[in-house]
Amino acid sequence: MIEVPDALRDLLARERAVLTDLHVTLARFAADPSHLDDLRTALHDLDGLFMLVVAGEFNAGKSSLLNALLGERVMPEGVTPTTDRITVVTYGERASETEDGPAIVRRTYPAELLRDIALVDTPGTNAIILRHQELTEKFVPRADLLLFVTSADRPFTQSEREFLELIGSWGRKVLMVVNKIDILEDDTQRQEVIRYVREHARETLGVTPEVFGVSARAAAAARAGGDEAALEASGIPDLERAVRERLGNERVRLKLLSPIGVAHHNIEEFRALHRDRLQMLTDDNSSLGEIERQTSQFTKDLTREFDTHLIRIKDILRDVETRGDAYFDDTVRFRRIPKLLNTKAVQEEFESEVLKDTERRIETALGDLVDWYIQRNLQYWEDVMRFVNERRASEDDRVIGEVGGRFQYDRQALVRGLRERAEEAMTDFDDEATSRRLADDLQNAVFRTGLLNVSGIGLGAAVLAFISTAALDITGIALGLTMVTVGLFVLPRQRAKAKRELRAKMQELRDGLEEGLTTQFHTEMARSQAALQGAISPYTRFVKAELDRLDLLGRELDGLATRLAEVKAEVERLD
Image (cartoon, rainbow, N blue to C red; front, side):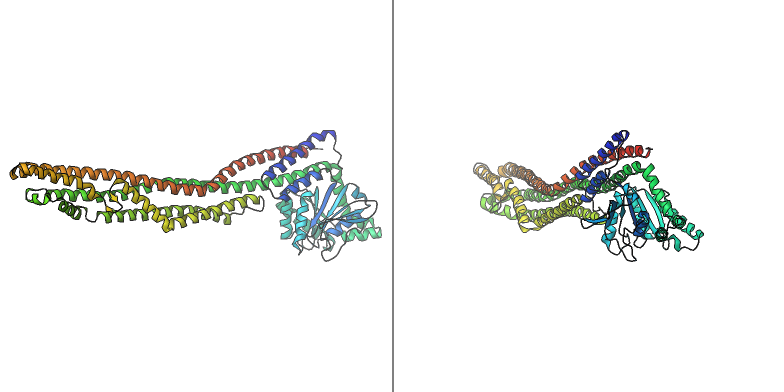
């Protein structure tokens, strides 16, 4: 167990608090369990042994390096991958080996170096078996100090550079070890390789690490032969001293910095995820706003276009009025008095010459109105479909990552559901029953004006009353007055009266028609838009709620980053 002086208790407590609060925040972020496990492990490791992790490519000599440091052949060595699991070596009075699950082997050995630390051997990062590399990458965050081993015959390969970038993202303290340095012919070549590794490691890590050139094989031979000079020349003692120096001077600092590195890595990863989600939801929200804007414009356009259709229908009635005026001018005359006395004949002629094809024209205009309305609403829903397709395309183009899969699942499910509802609505608009219902609704609106009735045109019956009245008035007057009086005074008054009453009736019908059709139009439009809003509303609620949640989580991550930076600064100032 790490001994914590009283002066460090507050600092350690604050570090634990940051890690615990971060764990809670990431859990609310629906973080992948592996990230939460990393934080729990980091908290647990604060109370554990100092952990020295050895990593590098297969055949770089990691196991032989550990054996050289321990002074005994504790780890198996070979030209093929000999380490397929994480091996943790700690102090024990006797050598032993136990399995800690399928991925970890624990060994004990009575070596003095192990009284202070746990040595960890990892599988090669370029091994053929991908699981071996994954094991190594998962164990990196637990390292208090990491020895990165490369080989003098192929120093700092591309895969090593990539693995070092991973190490750097976790903020690990690294000592670079160039093993098999004895295969180089002279000291100039050795220094050149060491310089090469140092420079490239600095480019990758952002800091200049210490680089040690060693020969684990030469160290083992020197120890076996008791040759101290050869052992010193192997470089292993220099590496041992560097490790012990850190155990003496930097042990507490490195031990406290290790969980901070884990926390920082997680904060930065989730900040990136937060930015990605926020951008995606902001795009979604903008698209929803664009749909609202288009809806408003669509309503205006539809109302304006409806007015054009309404004018067309009203113009049909104006044509009736115009023909009626001409009919009365021609019919209510002195020479036509005998015909005026025949009410039935007057009505039949009125229907034939004035009403004509009015019923057919109105029904055609109503049919065109229905077709137009349905087509425009189809276009309206297609706008929604474009929104859905754009959002789906953004999912294909944008890498959300494995972290926080619940967000991606919820969002995809809602977008998929929105698409399905939109498709269903478009199908409904295409259905003949919908067209028939809308046509019936509009027809009923016309019926209510008295313009049409179930048996056909109702206008003839409507005007029959004043036509008959005009004829009767003429009949009554004709019995008591001379024909001259009728021709000069009565007929002009009756003709004017018939025109006035026809105009009044036509205006009444136009007003009633406008009110009825407009009311029905707005009812249908409200029904259509309610269907659209109902289809969009689950996703709208999700976007709004998720934006609010992301705002809160973003502020929490910023606050945790600030607290972590403050703790890290204090840890780095420790003596």
